[in-house]
Amino acid sequence: MAQSSLKNLLAEDKNVIAPLYGKPDVDFVEGKGSYLFDADGKKYLDFVAGIAVNSLGHQNAGILNAISEQAKKFIHLSNLYPNYPQIQLGKKLLEITKFDKAFFCNSGTEANEGCIKFARKYFDRKGEKNRQKIVTFVNSFHGRTFAALSATGQPAIREGFGSMPGDFVHVPWNDCEALKKEVNKDTCAIMLESLAAEGGVMTLSHEMVETVNALQKEFGCLVIVDEVQAGMGRLGVFLGHEKYGLKPDLVSLAKALGGGLPLGAVLLRQKIADELKPGDHGTTFGGNPVACAAGLSVVSQIATPALLENVKARSKQLKEGIAKIVAKFNFLGEVRGEGLILGIPLAQEKSVGDVITAARAEGLLILSAKGNVIRLLPPLNVSAAECDEALQKLEAAVSRIA
Ligand SMILES: Cc1ncc(COP(=O)(O)O)c(C=O)c1O
Image 1 (tube, protein in one colour):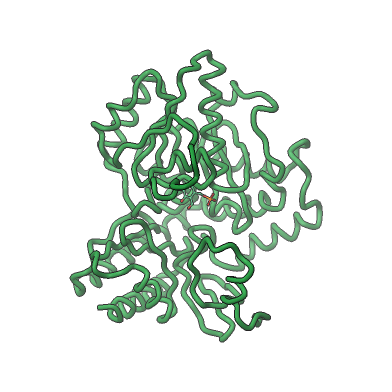
Image 2 (cartoon, helix red, strand yellow):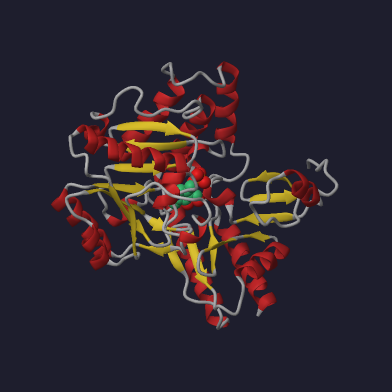
């Protein structure tokens, strides 16, 4: 087992790293499969999975091999030149999703910036220069760069950063009437997550999907689906929206795509690609060859019936197990979510932070979502035995704070 070289990791972190996260005092030195190990050799079941990044667990052999093989050839080339790692990953994504073109970037927020820019450019080139308005949702999360932040329906994280890019409006999640009031012939796009994970693990209602589809048809606006967290197999289908029946013109991907390396993507329809020209958008690092080689391994492993079936089976197992725990503690609300994004709301008098700390003491890593919600994001290849272990540890953690 690797040993940490730092004596006081958290103190060193405070001295060196900008204070943007509240971090626990834990020194992870190695990951293997669904587990992380700290410097004392303590084992943690990782149901955070790098916030839905390590979807195939730690030290996945296919990803490691793809990275080392590509690194021996070239690590970076530049988007000035075509390269096979990008093309092969793009081809694979288009084949699976039936989209027409791919644009690669480095992160979720960049993928969303790409979607927003491509949507506006599309209407601009078509001569519909007034079509700028983008309708998104209260409590949505689309990223931290300015346009993605403006799209994000959480005013608190915009506070103090001055003026935001305009023409973004937010309507309450699953409020069909509010959405209808905001969408008209000047609407550029409706932008939504296939499952609002950060915002509290909120699923889409059938009526909302029908409303989005009807408005898209009636007004010819584009639909952008943010699949950064809920895509890449996490809902038991390759892209989350397939589960609900949305018909996106643009999709953003990131998180799991690069197997732990920074990689994002926009998938777009041909009609939008037809309106784009060299110079309209760009990136130095986006679509890095090593990240794309890792991505090809990730996509090939995720887009298999066996893996997607595992997501569904483990989801059912976890939901049933959590329901039994919820029945024992009156401060826990009903389990919600889909696939392997699961949320458990907590009564206001209890703190989700305390549950996370108690779970870590039990050797289980979990995280929170908005609204005092416990969130679980296990790797997609998690086993039935590991899910049983997680349920036991979760119950022990909840008992600690009862
Ligand atoms: C749905 C969604 N979109 C966008 C982002 C932003 O991604 P990134 O942090 O890679 O910029 C996130 C990150 O949590 C996300 O969950």
